[in-house]
Amino acid sequence: MRVALVQLNSSDMPLENLPVIEAFIRDAAVQGAEFVLTPEVSNIISTSRKHQNEVLAFEADDPTLARLRIVAAELGIWLLIGSLALKTGDADGRFANRSFLIAPDGAIAARYDKIHMFDVDIDAVESWRESDGYRPGDQAVLADTKLGKIGLTICYDLRFPHLHRDLAKAGAEIITEPAAFSPVSGVAHWHVLLRARAIETGCFILAPAQCGTHDISVGKSRSTYGHSIAVAPWGEVLADGGTEPGITIVDIDLAEVARARARIPSLRHDRPYTGPAA
Image 1 (cartoon, rainbow, N blue to C red):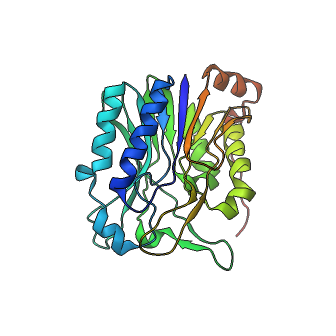
Image 2: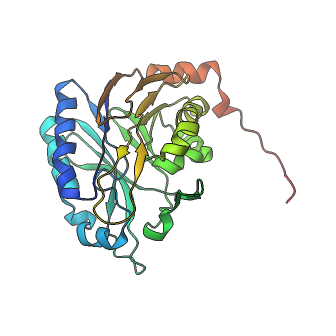
């Protein structure tokens, strides 16, 4: 299977980002990709809830989702829209951070709302409270497709191995990990965590990422780490997209999933235990 990881430097204007995303997807298809993946919040990088309220849409009306469904159908590809920021109608006004798996006929094969919110204090100058603007999901999602069984996660979910283990034990062969990762934690943790999740689960991990300093018209500036990567079930990094927008092409063989799990069948070795005491 040929896979394409799309690396973006999205701005805070969804309608400006859309033609850039579409162009990369079309380029990936020309290069033979059957499965194309875009990063977290492909439609907008923004730190202003006021601005988001002005430019975001509900799922049913979102122009990025509507257009990319048409593009996927036209090209006959599977497309993971890593995530879109969407209005929800929730009473508290919070948005959804929602991933979409689009089938080659343009249908939505699966949708997943990010479970774990990025509420952190990385250092003296970088802190984030994702839960102030986004409401968390509560449902793990596994999509059974002609490509294979695909588990959906988003960015900060990477730090919760039990979610990935549950997806693998439910049958996942591929786990998608679209991200807009902090440069500070990215240098320290991005590659090692993605490799760990692949090794622990025996899955391919596909992680398209946002990169660079983003063009933000309203609110605090934002930079992301880049380095979209694909990791094999044995833990090898198959490709790294570096720090600039673009496409990373990689060929994967799902037979490697069974081979890795046969060598170290840890998914079958869980044992009950008690403790520790609180």
